[in-house]
Length: 64
Image (cartoon, rainbow, N blue to C red; front, side, top):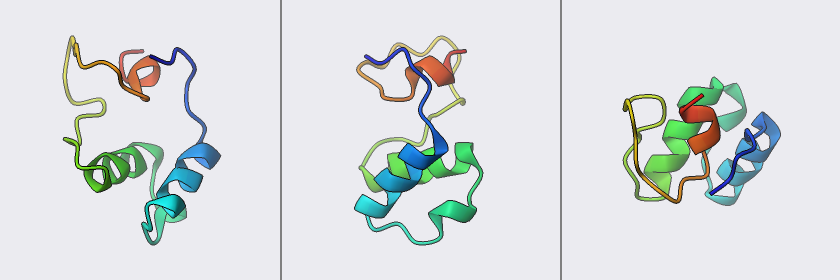
């Protein structure tokens, strides 16, 4: 589990690796949601209070 916030550049790189188009134009939250969906996960970032999903790359930022 990561405790560092993820950068927009890292998200854009991840999106590119997943083949997502137009990722650079998305807001950070929307980009994370798109990545979560592309990876086959729920797009839950910043939508669940007291989330206990682990491991999660976005947890440090989501629960901040």
